Image 1 (tube, rainbow, N blue to C red):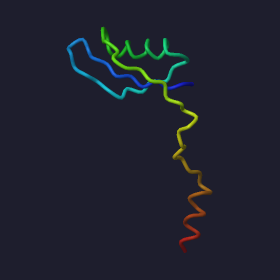
Image 2 (cartoon, rainbow, N blue to C red):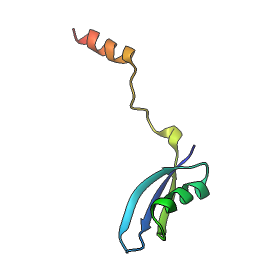
Image 3 (cartoon, one colour):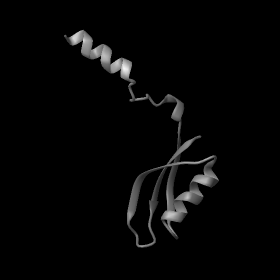
Image 4 (cartoon, helix red, strand yellow):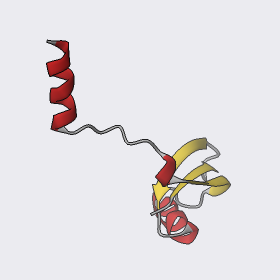
Amino acid sequence: MPKFDFSLTTRNGQKVEGIHIYGEDLASAERKLRQMYHNCEITRCQTINVDKEVSQSADIEDILSVICKNN
């Protein structure tokens, strides 16, 4: 599922940047955004390629191998 990065101006004039929302497409991500920020003005939207993000998780085998190497 693609991830979208939004910047917006709230109805009170406050600028908010770096809001990341997953959505099936831009329309569904924008709908989710507008549920959180009513009557906002979207100033920027960028699609983030989730496939290129590096996973930071490690499984138990990785952790145990590091511990065993240090002993």
